[in-house]
Length: 505
Image (cartoon, helix red, strand yellow):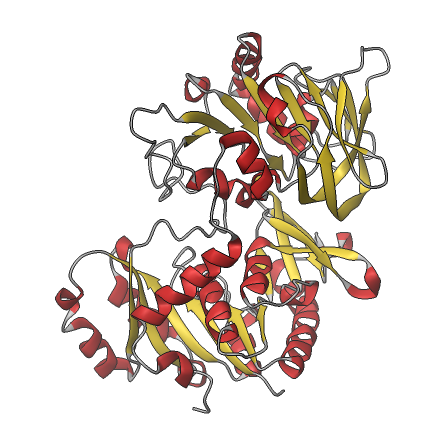
């Protein structure tokens, strides 16, 4: 191993690990170093399509995808060798080096960890041999004593990589010093010795009021507090876990509440079904001052909506059943009858069709345990059949002619990606609707009927051309976001700490 490893641990989930790891990737890359991100195992339904072994495409968590871009390297499956995609409350799809492993889905948690660790360790060793710095993200907390023996994502990885660890906590939640001390104290001494600094994240107010907390904490642990990061809602990086209700009914921390003077913001309601996926692609909308994003979990949440977005789903048939149980199906139909716009992406597209067919039980669940057919919303004349092979591919596509609410997209090109387990075609007994998007192979990826648009291509709102066409607006590029993150930690970390972390302890 030739690289130096920096690892970001958290006192809890949501403490700011992904955000900080992304900022570190860009900070070290700007020092002229060859940098790569790594997370041994991620659990998320937000995923991106990236190169895998043998030229095939695979998938990794979106957080590591963005971290790779911040590090100025090409995202690939070794950056997140194990991805767990939750399907039920007690089951997840297991993805190893970008490929679904059905044989591991039913293996108990602790036993499965021992099977997965060699894959993660090999990927880490290769990245350490090829780079100057590897920025590693932990998962949850490293001090979950009921899971510690089988946890390979946190301290087992830290010890193998000889990582200089930062422990970050969300001070806005309260109890930050207790979280930091308790986490450190529960670690075995050999692991606690890896912790080089504490980070207080999302601080509001006068930092002088923290004294004498950091000093007392260092006296107890020997670990200094190396950064106090102010609350910063507008950093522009997507939330790793998608739905984040910081405001009742809305996205937290964006600019969505601030429309221009005298202007009514476009109200966009996103259906927040239980197995929602790939929400990170909506981040740009969250940042637009002329857009107000709200989550829809009941019919009243759709009142006054200009657009309704049905996003991706990890288990489309079960989410469709949830939609009906909440009576959102009737509310969406009424919205369409009034001339309102609807956008379905991936699973959302499938729901918009006439029928979802699953004869092999690919989407087996408590709602639809043995496969079969389920009626869709009937807003597009399409039939979807679920198949075992997952479609994973990047695409560069150009819209054909559209009309109505989506006319501005006509002729607009975008770089996106497909990630789905369904094949969708016209219903043979219904009139055809417009085919408005095709991939380079000529396969249809988008259909329009009236103001209802369904797409298999993810990444619509990550295209500057799309944002310009629909809103006449420009959002920050990802590169600008990453540079902003690096500037932020450069200002708020104690002088010399970031450079010192890659020096021998």
